[in-house]
Length: 183
Image 1 (cartoon, rainbow, N blue to C red):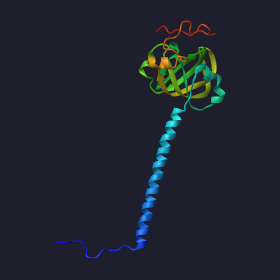
Image 2: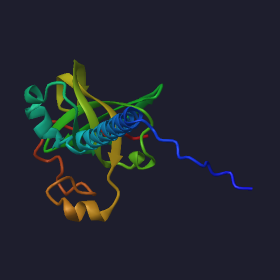
Image 3: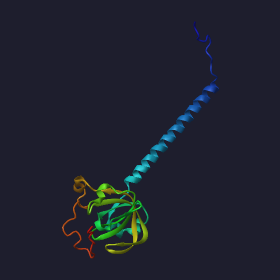
Image 4: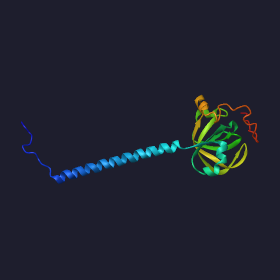
């Protein structure tokens, strides 16, 4: 039994043009959506990649220029300053005799418990009174992301940055004393 039509049905030219236009618009809309999604993903990646970081001394010195913009700050955690309560960890970090008060939201990594551990924190300066080993301050650093240095690869690639072990005389030139935790 042959079911093929004996006469081909001819589409009018107008119907063919309409179908072609619709296909063109659908392809155009899909292309625009894909480009927008790609641009969004790229922008997010670049935004995260362009967050610059400063050592504590640089961040304090450039506080006015940094304002409330997000950046990364690095230094060594002063062991006796660490306190945690209700998901907020407060502590101080030091580099080149400059000390910053930190309020970190979230759980710190396990290695955070190591004394004098170098950390890189992501966040921003917030105006508010704080007390540090170096004295009173008008700002503290609010952090929501913490990276703890724990590999030798970082040290060899970033020798001018903070070292794994505090060097001999780490705080000798500082005008303040760091309280020692005897617990």
